[in-house]
Amino acid sequence: MSLLRENAVLALFTCLALGYLVGKLRVGPIQLGGICGTLIVAMLIGSRHVSVNSDVKNVAFALFIFSLGYMAGPQFFANLNAKGLRFGILCAVEAVLVVAMAFGIAKAFDLDVGTAAGILAGAATESAVVGTAQEAIGQLGGLSADQITELQNHVAAAYSVCYLFGLVSIVLLTSQIIPMMMRIKLPEASRAVWEKMRGGDATLGPDEQAALPALVGRIYLVSQGEGSSVRQIEALQPGSVTVEGIRRDNQAVEPDDGVELRRGDRVLLVGRREAVIDTGHELGPETSGVPGLDSPLAVRDIVVTSKDFAGRTIAELRTEQAEATAGVYLTDIQRVDHHLPAVSETELHRGDTLTVVGARSAVERFAGRIGATVRQDTADYIYISLGICLGVLIGMITVNLGDAALALGTGGGCLIAGLVFGWLRAQHPTFGAYPPVAAQTAKDLGLSVFIAVTGLAAGPDAAALLKEYPVLLPVSGVLMVTVPAMVSLFIGRKLLKIEPPILVGAIAGQQCSTPAITAITNVAQSSVPVLGYTITYTMSNFLLPLTGPILVGFLGA
Image 1 (cartoon, rainbow, N blue to C red):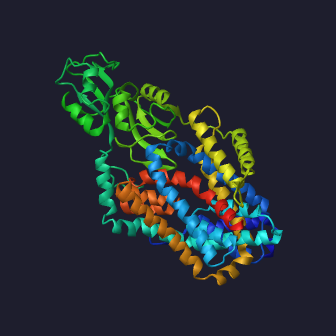
Image 2 (cartoon, rainbow, N blue to C red):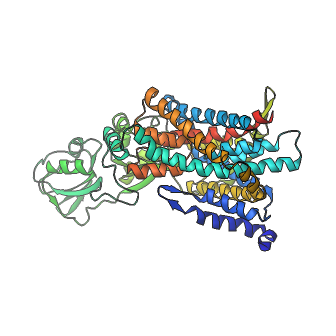
Image 3 (cartoon, helix red, strand yellow):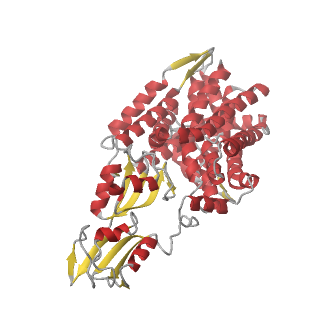
């Protein structure tokens, strides 16, 4: 241990390496995760008086929380509509109940503000609350530096225990117990919703591929339907099939709208499999590949920025924007780092990333209308740094609420700045690049480093706190997950009438629980629950970090 005490870099990355190794442990549907594993390892090493300068923690947390806000910004503002705010009720329920319950537990058992904030952070399974609460504690008046450090360490110690029990609770509740309470089987219920949305097979796993792909290209020999124009052929299955090539007497013919087909022509059709087959029946028999007829298709990732497309379902776009969508086939929708079903009734939001396939000219036309092609630009460090600076300044603003002085702190300020800067980038993708892979890496690394340094500092005090509250902390973790989940279940089903699989995902999202949505989609064998998860996850990522300073302000008043 003396080597770790003398070398902070070695100590930090030892915690990360061993923590993520421990985080790979899995019991049934529950996996500990790298963050929780890092905290446990860091607290054990920290108990031997190994530490890292707290400034490292502050920098890492600012980078994490800004990146989190940046990634969620486009979806957060896109959800500020009637449908999004409908799901936002569940997030408000979560935020209000966890603050109220943490406050009540603190008063009932005479807990210090650090322990209460740690219970809140752990039970909400939201690591960001640790940082915002610790910052708020650092701003409390009338406390010595040693008292502040002790209270901040209590946040991490209480968080570690409550997080473990909160994680197990939310995973079991959403993937097993709540579906039983609603008397549904997640796979069947998800399939029913998928079919209602006019989708296809929702049973493919993340490592599986359909044996019969949805998008195909096939060549047909014209033996009937001669005299029909390309426009007439494509009109047989509007929006679902296009003529991409014609071969006539060993010569290529450009498939313009007015070109008429002749007997003996070989025609390349591209589109949805069923539509291609049905259209092919109107032309003649299918033939093998013809040299020179194959037409390469372009694949693009396009981010939605146009207000004319945002808020519309895919089916509505096919009808209202027929010219822009002609010859373009949507194969995937990604929102807040999760994949959504690319079916007719899925609604598009600003900031969604669409994967489309089609002829290069059609794809470029579509990209110009709906938004911008995702480029692998290098990160704009000027934009990112200015955003973090602005967030720090916002966090310094203090609001007096009665006897309580509330401040967002660096965490809350950088979160708001990240949301706004991410939204601005989605509206104007010509500046402020922060590639998704870079943002995800910065977010994960920033949180991991923050948790590691926090755990090292909390190590010496953790054992005493756990001995003092061996029952209260686990019970609090379970109750503060279960109560909001049950209330949201009632509101979601009885009042909001949300479809059961989507509601289950939304309850996981209000807890910002990635392990829970992973378990849900594995049980459901479908991505349908993600439709609810992405909305509440985005809103709770904004609301829950703010609960830390609010609780500290009330208890410290």
